[in-house]
Length: 218
Image (cartoon, rainbow, N blue to C red):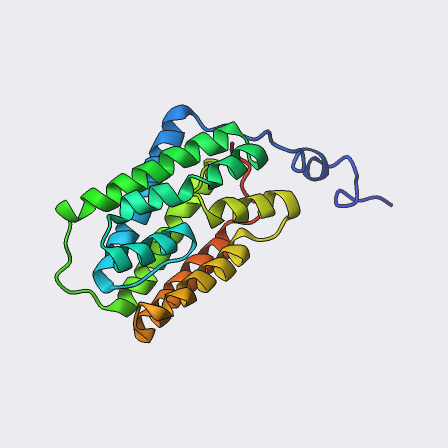
């Protein structure tokens, strides 16, 4: 005897499992996400610079050159990312590349003009590492969900996730920790350890929050 629970024509087994079409982001939604994501990451750059910490990817390399030469971080960061746009254009498409270029340009500008608007008199490096890691992870998540990035290793991480299903956070963590370890020759060990903590916090946040297939917006 069949029951309502075993009836294959039940609404629970027919209507509830029908796929929903993906919703596309509008231009205003993209604009606010790219601005907010870049702003969050620029605040992280300010916190890390104040605490003497580093980050990974091309931002970490830009920090190393900034500490070693005194050149503006924003200008170095923008220049280092230029070679990665070719890879992004070939592998991720024109839309992703253009949005990434805009995001990198905004971050470079915000990082250089930010100290004119905000200054922290005292900042514990442990607090800076945790807060900065979460802020950067949130900013990168905003950008990724609107088909953008901050260049460098982030482009490679997102490509590997979309193409092969490898978690972007896992790839980002390996790259970031490697870049931060390279700073041992110019930054005290204690600051490098805090920097690695910040990279791990950010990568774990992305690892948990940005999974293939979870977010279907465009």
